[in-house]
Image (cartoon, rainbow, N blue to C red; front, top):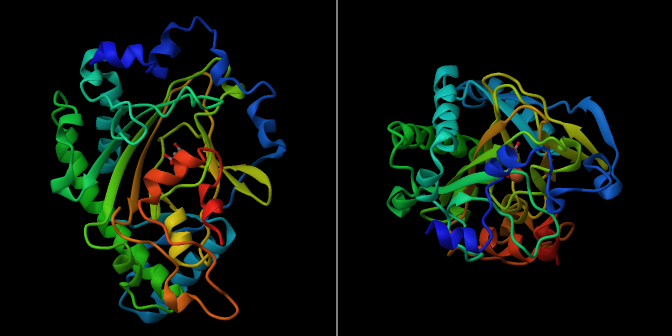
Length: 353
Ligand SMILES: O=C(O)CCC(=O)C(=O)O
Ligand SMILES: [Fe+2]
């Protein structure tokens, strides 16, 4: 397995960072520096991101829930990202999720390789990175990408065997995330005056959740590489656990890049492309990217929730009318297909009618 992976060019960024003797290979380098990438200016200020209180959102008091819904609305209108508090997960538990994720990257190379992804472009699950020889630039990151739900569709041979707590913690985290997911989808349905379970129904039975652990080693040329290219997420929504100390996520707003600050104990949520399609463009998926640090590693744990890959996803009928005609084509298995067609920026632009 290892030989095959090496022969076909899998090169872990983690190893590269250790062995590079301060030389960063060209295929990672943006010559003009990442601040100028796409000629979009960079703001030194942090983006203001609305904090939504899940306890309020689910409060039996209509007035309290309504007030919180308005906050969610303003977050979705302003940048498509929001933070949540009172989500039911303790600080200690979130630390545990980060810890088992980090432990994966501390495993010996041979152990990590046992979980290596296949090499086909649709074999995305497992350990590796998304650096293909036909891309112009590589990302300064390795990742582990695993289907965590539905449980009987887990590909357990790609899960690390030597980490005792990995499976339990991931199981627990998945359960918590699925609950949160439901609360958010219900709230978003309410915001567009649909039945509360409408978005969930649109995702089909056995909708999928994937966990993606992003590991960004430090890079001596940090201001000339990207940890993750400019993209929007192909998910319905994405639930992101940030690194505890090291910032790196940036969001595009009004043609400027803004830093997303770390707020302890919150989770960060963003709209994905398939929600944009279902909502007929009422909710928009934000464009974002990750930068890396010159000295410190960074780790994020991302849960992407998305429709069943067999389900046709299209704008919901009730959100189509004379003033808002159908804006998107019907798609199927979007999360696999579209990023391959357009690995930069917003593949969803190709679904616009
Ligand atoms: O690591 C981050 O901050 C961003 C991760 C991300 O955008 C993704 O995994 O889709
Ligand atoms: Fe993303």
